[in-house]
Image (cartoon, rainbow, N blue to C red):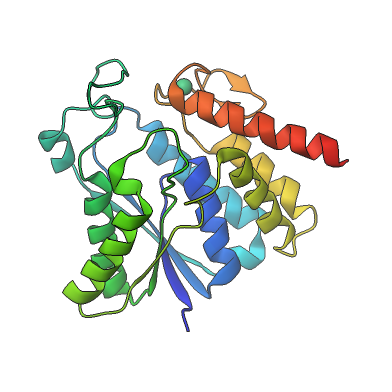
Length: 244
Ligand code: ZN
């Protein structure tokens, strides 16, 4: 029986929903992020704000929420030339992948997360990778995760479970999942509280814009990450309106 988890937590909408998923399910949950000199430090700040707000608004989750880890991965900036770590404009490459793609990034993340989980005695690795996402990053694919689960379990001689709660759902369904998890938390108005928390404190925008506030949160509103988040939120809001 699995009772402990390590969540790859970047401070975005997806990983915050994954964190709520783990807190609803496991006895002890720790979080990890990777500092690879992202152009926008706002990501690393957002995650601390989200953790603080989760603790304040969901005391029953707070009791399960353990240590937060940030691993230095500056080397990633040395091996990749990407608009996430360098000051170049976002664009699509000839390969069909956006230039935010860092080759093998998730392979590295998962390997380091497993090493940390091993040391911390955590059994499940939870990550927000998703195949229905627009980007088509090959290291987010379900098969990649299944292969990694096997490789890491063999290579460290410990059975790891890689859990990907968002793998087959879209962004509207991710908002819906957050609301359901909030509702089931036992906290009064927990569903809306978690939605509000995600809107206000998580960060998605590629340009690091925290000045423009939309119904779905902060961001430039025009980069692919903002567009995806806005579209998902709109779908979720429409669905909610139809139901009430
Ligand atoms: Zn944006």
